[in-house]
Image 1 (cartoon, rainbow, N blue to C red):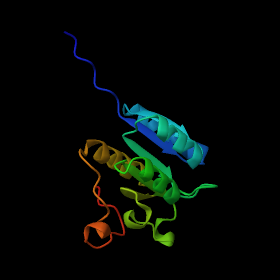
Image 2: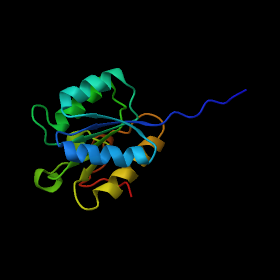
Image 3: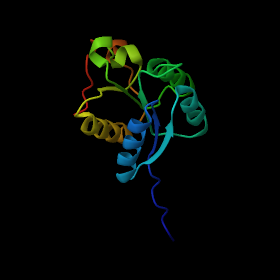
Image 4: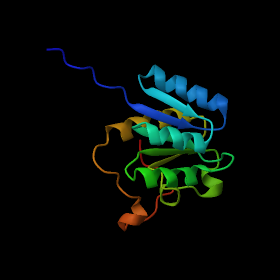
Length: 148
């Protein structure tokens, strides 16, 4: 009897920056992930509703719906979805897991690739229901993700 090969983890990337989107897609596909992309949050929601993604990676600043609003819509569809928020404005805007509903917030920087790969791997390996942000569990809020 032939054992079916494990399915490749499904990742949704959402960003209005086409170059960043394609670079992240290429990198994740090289590592064996199956990646779909969307250029807007609205397009991302349509894909999210039709496919079971293991992880969603979204930019914060996008025309129309921003990343936090997009995550809010995702949580209405699937409260246990695993979501990573990327932004070049983490510090100036005070973006945290608690105020964005993301599982992990990553600052776009020279170290983004390393942090993104670690975060994706961590979220894919995590089983069971999503833990709410620390502020909702009664702990203090975190300024940065602890995923290293």
